[in-house]
Length: 392
Image (cartoon, rainbow, N blue to C red; front, side):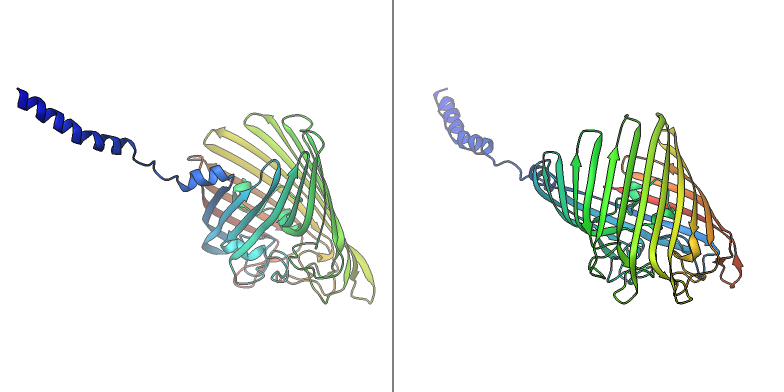
């Protein structure tokens, strides 16, 4: 019995250090997500891939991204890294990679409106520093425009294709923007930048931006914005083309009628001074448009969206004087071209991170601007598209 007690005591003596060591084992290292959360840095992104079929889009299209006649494509891979505290300094970097990245390059890479500026599918869409203090937020760098209902990132839209109005406004600006929140429901925005889609200014003039956001009641949102400054009269940035004042006004209104049903309206007007008229003089060119949206959630996982719009391209200033996009007008066409389009998009929201979309769209013009692969022209174009969108 005495020997048994001695053996037990010796075993306990040796076991004690092991127990202490086990209890003192260092904690597991923090995950990357934990490190980012602790530092206030957010990382988010998405992948958008799909298929597009378009009839009569061989030479000209009024679209920005989805002009392919029969093609699968990586539409976008988007990644955003940001640190935007409510007080103090921060910043944001947003990249767009894929087919759509070709169409949003800023000067000196950009070319005609909506056309790939380079073969590069990589675009630094936004990169800016930020300071926030009280009601004032100031950003400096490259950032997206105030204009428009629809945005570059696929996750910010409910249709697959973009509206005609989306391609009729700037994508990004490089400069400084200040936002002053007068209250929880009203903010004023002012800034100065290089102009429409210009990383480097193509002229000596600067463009002024003004805007306001209003939420007078919870279901109603109103955004009004305007730009004015010296721009190329060819419609795209140029260091050699004639310059004139371009002014654009845009208003976006959205209203939730009932929980599953919401509507939206966008109005756009753009004027360009000092445009050559082809007879030795100049004139003020203009285009304008309106788009309406109806969104209905049939169930928490099924959504339907109807978009209809009208766009009046006065004298062919925006799209070009003749078919053959992206031709820009050396002299203006003699007749306006008016466009109409209707789009129906159905979405299945499988989860918070995955969405499947299918879409049918019809575009129509009063002139024969659309062309098929045989060269035959037409006043209308039909398209269908499928898109898979994963967010992380």
